[in-house]
Image (cartoon, rainbow, N blue to C red; front, side):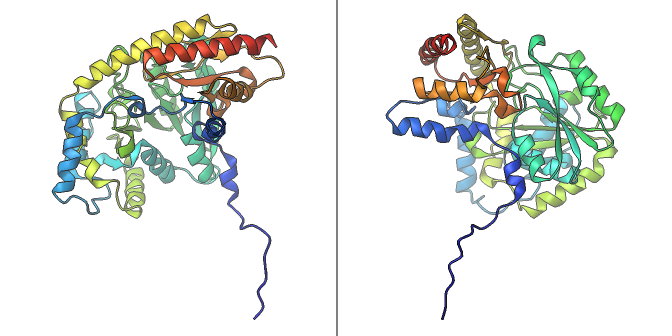
Length: 405
């Protein structure tokens, strides 16, 4: 019997190489730094629990009870009734009337976004995505052979959408408008007039609105109203989860709420078909959704206060640094400063140099779709205040030396 050694590697799909996920890709560089003996301060992933914030005990108790009561089977593909009803009631109470049969419980917001886009776009379809953006959108669209069309968020206008730029991007292939508000990665919250203009724009062009509202309960001044409140009959799908405002990111439990417009009925049927194909999301964790939305939310009051204090410190210290500007965030736990880079450097070069010199890990702005030469980076400011003060001291010293070379 003769065996033949085949030297060539098994080929991979071309679509895998059409996107990057900088938030996690940069960790490989951090691991090299750690291996060399430098302590790394991870400011790259927005995980509150990793920084010491605790999941509310009544949510943990609900999941424990579900497991002990035997809810460890497969569940309904759309989610358990109690969770769907609680989500529907929460949206309805906030001015966006939703019925439980139009709610799907998903493995985090990420799966909901993938289900919605999978049900909507064809190869060659276009989706309007903010720049900077959360890179999941570009990853999913690349996988679907669809096209990302970036619309600009303006740092000179508190990271508001550039509506004039948005209007130039629509073509017959455009299918949807992605709105991330409150925004990741900028921490911006859009005023009602801007929200109204985005809804009107989508209606004018017959576009689906994908409203990523994960941080809606983490506005520093309180919860932010849902887009569906402004126009309940617009073609809106809203997404949220337990990950951020309920401090349970590892549970991968989210939801999508499909607006009541009959224009969305066929899309809802397509989402249901895709949901059936993946069986269900994590079942025991679904039993925490109703307690989260109908029970004690007092942790959010203290969480918002903690976030505001960190945001204030972050903006103050960044603005004091040589060559650094920063728009103040008004929600969530992200800031996106800009460094006045030398002409031959990129944001990735700065971020990696900062990491190797100080152990401070951030994410370069080009990982969110911004031009690399503009010098933006995203900082997650969830660490304790004393640690942030130390981190920003390291950044200030490094940046002064970096820009003076």
